[in-house]
Amino acid sequence: MSHRFPFTFTFFPLLKPTFVQLLDPVCISFMQLTLSNRFSLSLSPLQPQPRFGLLFDIDGVLVRGRMLIPAAKVAFEKLVDSQGRFVVPVVFVTNAGNCLRQTKADQLSHILGVPITHDQVIMSHSPLRMFKKFHDKCVLVSGQGPVLEIADNVGFKNVISIDMVRESYPLLDMVDHNRRPKLPSSPLVNLPKIEAVVLFGEPVRWETNLQLIIDVLLTHGNLNTPHQTHAVPHLPLLACNMDLMWMAEANSPRFGHGTFLVCLENIYKKITGVDLKYEALMGKPSELTYHFAESLIRSQALQRQWELPITSLYAIGDNLMTDIYGANMYNRFLEERAARKNPKAVAKVAAATGSSAAMPGGEEEIDSMWESELALPSATSCKSILVCTGVYNPNAEVPSDASRCIKETVFHGHRDFRFDPALVEPGHIVKDVAEAVDLIFQQEKFVPQ
Image (cartoon, rainbow, N blue to C red; front, side, top):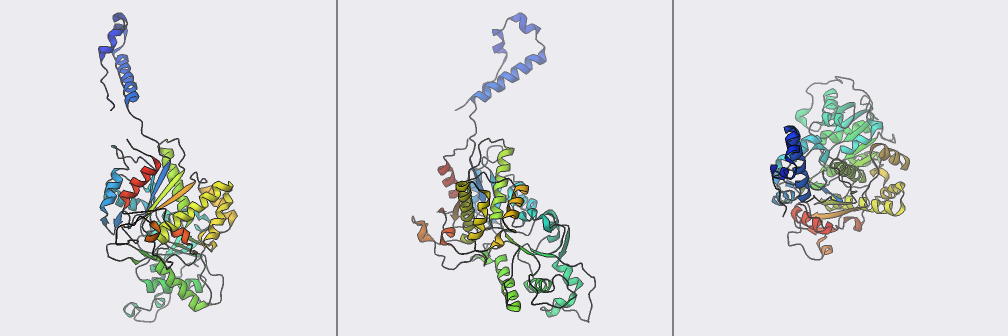
């Protein structure tokens, strides 16, 4: 145990009295403070520097809807020091997309009782900051919450919402009889030609959003013209959050934005006979999201002046098809990159998904985008940990053989991500997030002071 001893004038009799009398009182006070600080520092234990960072999913791991999972409180008491500072770099990676990063950070601070900044939060739409070639285009956005503010926050300058479209073209929204116009009408406002579509998350009125998005795609952004079902390629489409389902307070998972995408994809193909194509897919399990998270982990370590590089990431989640798949896929990329020392190995990860839709453009664009926006990763591994408090719940004690706990036979991941059994196999399965933190500290031999 360390002790701090008050440094008093009792040390000064060691000096000759005549010398002490010549000292200015301010000088004496400064000498007392300096010697006291040095003495205290020499006796105080140094906080160990972590070489790992934590990526936390939120829904099903820390909360269920608005309810805090008790284990989350226990876990975060171990992750902060007496001053409320994190002892390891922490980033919250959620597929939610209905609010700003600051709003989510404030919510987490309140729920968990620890100070969290927006720089520790990644929403599903956060990687859109890197898609600068679309920021000056006129884009249609779909989702809920303050979609116009969210779009502005990630860099878009010319944005049109679904509500703006239906107000300008009231005859297009016809499913709900009570919302149909009572009298024939013509477009109220001529909106500018739409040049791209951005899907933030599941909307409130699916029939309205599905209809108007299809209208925009089939008219190539000009809603004053009829459908052109053979016009290919369609407008660029960027989608955030591929979760088929997510866990709230209900006993069973609820539909997520991935379910909405399934509807949109099938409607488009049924009408046109061809597949809907994505310019990019963001949110977990997209490697774009994990690379963005890794950059925030590095930034935290730099701000804390931790000199050791962060070489390991631990991703804690409750969904095999997003959290575990994404972490394992990013780990595959990191391993290939470390083995080959070649940044272009990232293209191989995109190939592993069965589609280039997970990544923007080709290899050159990937490299230039990441090099201009984010430094190349320092981490060499991303390890996945599955908790049983959310979407995945075996409703029994966790067996010693983790492979027996994986009963998924139907791939719930997005259409453009190829099913690979190895990618949905978690590194570890634990009961809850508190056990996950204990396991990580044990594996890293990390003992916070």
